[in-house]
Length: 232
Image (cartoon, rainbow, N blue to C red; front, side):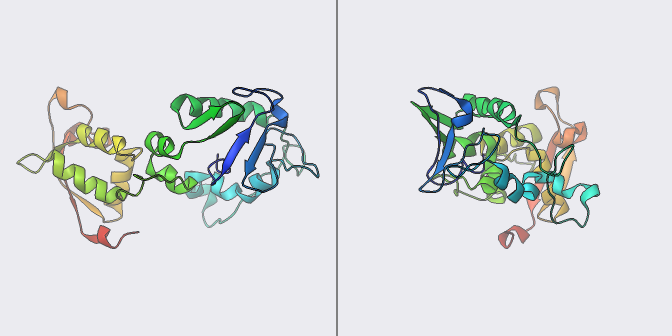
């Protein structure tokens, strides 16, 4: 996914249609670089497998697992095989294709003829700005605002005369604007001192889930502290 997200990257099947032809000979082309066969079990002089890229991006691939307590003070990891040092790529195709099928269903991966590619706009819309930053997706609306600015805009739009917003409405609005897991992000901003929770209250059944699934936080009053103006 990271390689396919690069500029000019395209997945080339050996036959017409989605995964047409021989899967192991499917090639990932990035500009004029050497082709990569993501479903091939080994390299050759003519193409690369995914092995060097998996090794190179091992730490990045952990995502939020980088913060796990077992990895405290760790800055890098490496993948090894179960029985020997070198890990096997034999089952890679069987694991990658289902993920690509899901992304194609969402419209994140587009395909025509014998080619497939990432639609960056659809990727940002479906998977959010956090993933966009990780994978380098870009489109005209992607830089419309940073997540905290989006929060400020939606708070202003949804806030009642009392200063409260309905948590479920805010959650839905932030998710629609490309922020995945809004409750988690709000929690992080509160812990980082970028946002303050200045009030909370029970609502009614129609108000849905409260912030952090707390029924006492169905109605919330949030303010940005101003530190977000220098936050990057």
